Image 1: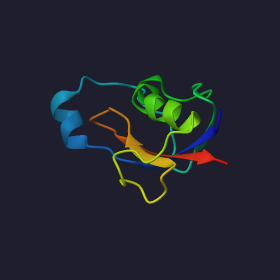
Image 2 (image 1 turned 60 degrees about the vertical axis):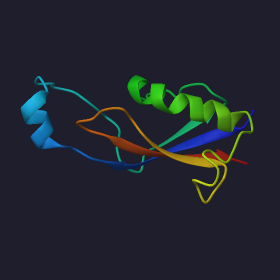
Image 3 (image 1 turned 90 degrees about the vertical axis):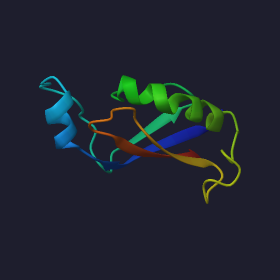
Image 4 (image 1 turned 30 degrees about the vertical axis):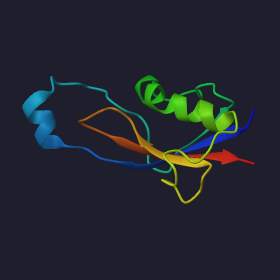
Length: 100
């Protein structure tokens, strides 16, 4: 199985949506831009957000098993994907790539 590197590319925050719709939360996300996680096969890396993993794990599993070229030409690097977590208030963008 191949190793997959996950790099945190960007964090967004939509304060207007948070103020209007979200109940107050003291602690939402510890992930930092530039942070790197290494996946040994399809296993969730230590310290990685459970919710984000639910979104990314099918792509990590596919890449780890040699899959590539999601959505027929979407990515310049066929052995990669750019995905975001499912938090509509604080979405985080992740770049996944196979480590050869």
